[in-house]
Length: 456
Image (cartoon, rainbow, N blue to C red; front, side):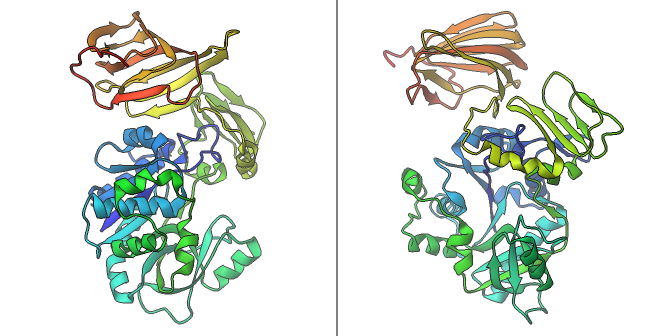
């Protein structure tokens, strides 16, 4: 059995902590048994690992999230990078082509697709193991997991089983219904409808056949090469709603979509995370603060107050999801980014009278980690080291650096930085042109030796 984890999201509903790169799956806000905190993606991967399923898993994510994904899950899971976001069907097709042409998986093997931000308990991962036997017994093309509804939600799709299909561990599917209004949702529940949690399984061969019907290549490299040309497609619309033989396994354990502040706050360990306080008469209010300055909430019940590098949100918990509409059409550069080697936070951005863009960022690197070896066509960098020890290579020459040092990296100079101990520095970027292609990666690995290049 192969597990495909779908990762993505626009990062709008949990703004300002989430953004286009650090979406909700990467926010380390969920409590762990040892008193620490973990993200949704870390929680799901831990659950798969405990169930013995992580080694047969891969993650499909947009290329902009590869660094933060690798930092979150390590090297145990294969990462498949989408050049563009093209919807869930195309993401699943990318995984299918990888399993077929790269891993050479048998066409009869079962593929299970899971959203990477599912909030579930251990029993959920054990239930995934039922998929092969259920598909074999039912002779269905697709098997899903459906969650027993707790209330008539308008945020989820519904799976409606056929009448008289009880008596087995699965139910035959009569109909799929996308997010209904509350009245229709209540009617679906009366009829035995289940929440569609986005988890399904089928054989690899079935996935490849759906791709062939839509003229998609089963070769991984060829599909990646033409990815930009593909239309955006949803698996539900493209496949599920047209499947004649589908079954669903009811699940009665813990499952939640915690992609909005009102859904997330009940799972937080404390009402105050970060610097600040909430007064006793602010009942039902939560504060999540990533800033270095404190935030104090006084006499304000029923709010979510979230402060981060991208902005500050003050909203009634039930109304906080409206921030998604506020942010539509306002594409902004994320002020904080998680990387495989650490993190980067923008402190200031300005433009000089001569048109030079000046960005000041604080960089935190983990001990033993390194950046890629790369160069910028139009960007000059000034590095000021605040703490720690490291080394950098510029145009083939290795140099040591420590707290108090300053390094100038001219435009066009090949360079990479490695932290020997935890390393903090300020980087000032001076960009003279906004042309696409300023950043050029030479190698993702640490370059031990390199002769100075003849030209760039």
